[in-house]
Image (cartoon, rainbow, N blue to C red; front, side, top):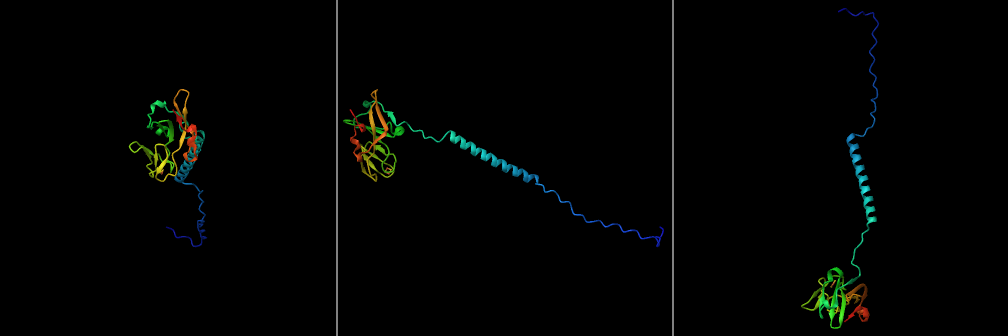
Length: 188
Ligand code: FES
């Protein structure tokens, strides 16, 4: 090894590495969060489309309560015995047909207290409401419990073919003297 020449100019110092600013990484959305964002967006979009479709469907097919027509035929008068409460039309039409010695009347099955449906008790010859205990005679007139007034009657007549025709669009209330209306009673 040769000794360095002391007269030789000193070697320039190696340049210090210049501290350069680190390149700013472009802000990127991590792949996972991007996917979950897309999932949420799609879910929201799908939900809004479903809501719109539901609204459209409801518009096209509105909620309609299908009720039986107010007028119905109830068979022939001789199918009901004198003194009988005919319950054939209770479920479908909410009507009792009652025959007395002079004719037939159509009683509403709606309790005039709060609207429950009473039961006909043959042994006790009365209508009894299961909700609060109101009782009605066979005629429909109230005699016990909280109800303030009799059952209502509907218009009744004979159709051209001889069958009983009940028209529920016309009601008759005893307390208003409407049971005197000939349309509220089918004379036989
Ligand atoms: S609803 Fe009939 S007694 Fe109350």
